[in-house]
Amino acid sequence: MNMTDMHLLVCSDLHGSDRALDVLKNAQEDDAFDAVVVCGDFTTNGSPKYVKNFLAQARVPVLGVPGNCDTDAIVDLLVKAGASVHGRRVNIKGLEFFGFGGAPPSPYGMPFEVEEATMAEKIRAVGVRGGVMVTHTPSLGMNDLTKGGRNMGSKALLDVAEELRPRLALSGHIHEARGEAESHGTVFVNPGPAKEGYYSKILVQQGVRVSMCRI
Image 1: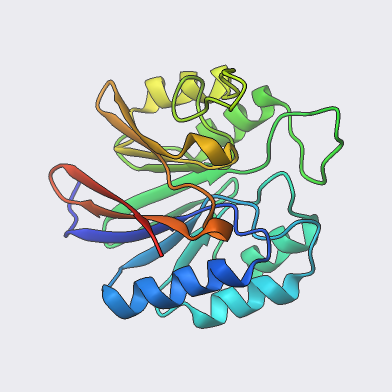
Image 2: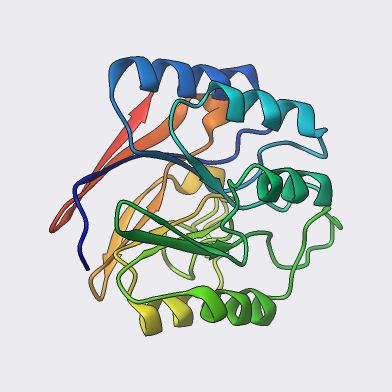
């Protein structure tokens, strides 16, 4: 793969908050990025207005997937803005980004719930080895431990990651499972909830360097 160094601002679980907008503003003032990656839950059943505002404030391309709290209107907006990697693949500076959003069905009936098998099928259709896999739901055992001590990640997504061996696998969803893990050459990152000021700075070179940050 021919690519130059990539500087990524990664965030998740904005939930329509002003603090998440501050994350974007402050991070961009401190560092120069090549892209902003959002791992879902731009809103909580919210209108596209917040997402439009976020996209307008970004100085570089934004790539994202919907979270389980996002609606079809958010997905449509991301597609129209050229900011979607939900069932899509996008190349920036030689690095391939691909993914799929949502979360598995739950008792809560959230707006964007998808069977794990469907997530895996859609990602396989667009995924490539050595790229960046972007999901809302984490892979099983990778930054997915709840406060109650349960691993809430997806076995199907873990299988896909082990097959495709992306350089990075980015996710959110489990707010308290902020962190970094590595398996089979893939670095898994959950930046933590942007609504609480958390985000990650990631430098992709020959290797991957992750900085966990908070404003």
